[in-house]
Length: 354
Ligand code: SF4
Image 1 (cartoon, rainbow, N blue to C red):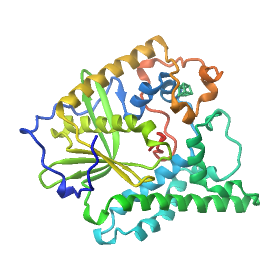
Image 2 (cartoon, helix red, strand yellow):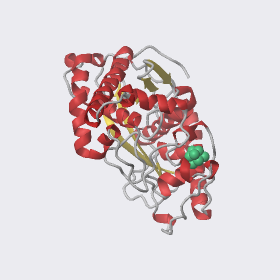
Image 3 (cartoon, protein in one colour):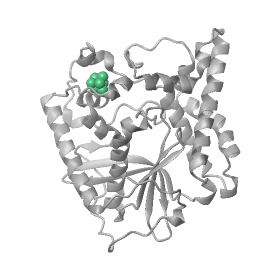
Image 4 (tube, rainbow, N blue to C red):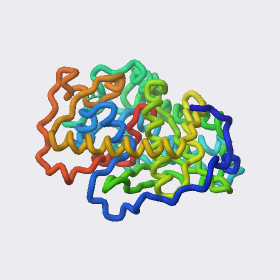
């Protein structure tokens, strides 16, 4: 993995090697078989039981303040590029925070419950009983230390909301420290991409941003806003980007020249340049992973795999590793189960580093 200085879309270097292969991915018009998103595929790799809780049991998860802040910052960065290039200033981005927050609340009023002390609804997983210290710190950072002050309820909520919006603005400062949006014109933002590989495996996911150079080179950009230590989740983030690179290669016939992670909290850039052979191997890995998921569904065998991610897992209390008991396996025919969790309002970020 190589860190490069920030590039404009027009500066993405030309691809090495010969002409791009013809696109091999098929249009996923009528998917009847299994499907995978990067998050769910990474869930199964990380912990099969977590995959089951999210994808098969579809247990509701109360999003953390850190996740909601990530969703807000992604929305602001998407809107920022609606402005004329000269207007994409830090002040303009900061001015978008409150309106985008209002939109999120309008889409799903429950997101504002992170500022209240209302009880968690029955059946909803609120958070890990044994959280990772970094997860606790991220929550404190997102909601502000005002949560700890002995204020009347109304004032405490207002203080937490102000701290939350301010911490979102701080992440935007991190963005401007690593990129100049006045020098960029993204080709696509928040785009759903998908393809069919193998016999019938549907791969799909949302990319934060796609830059295309005049020569046709692609750069996939993913904003990372979460408070988790990135070294603990960098493999997961790279897995996600390779997933996007594979889908783009199969649908557009071009191996993305650069896969870029922008870590806003640390104001750091990480670039990776995939190669076709690597993506071919990755495609085989995903096909094997999908087969393993289908086997686990057939055998109803999703085992816990403890790791540091447990410190962020919303379902610890149902996990045997923490003394819990999973719910009975759903009696739905597994063939109709999609590999996506139940939608909860806006498309909230669900990885600790997202
Ligand atoms: S607590 Fe850990 S082992 Fe248990 S389901 Fe969650 S991630 Fe898996």
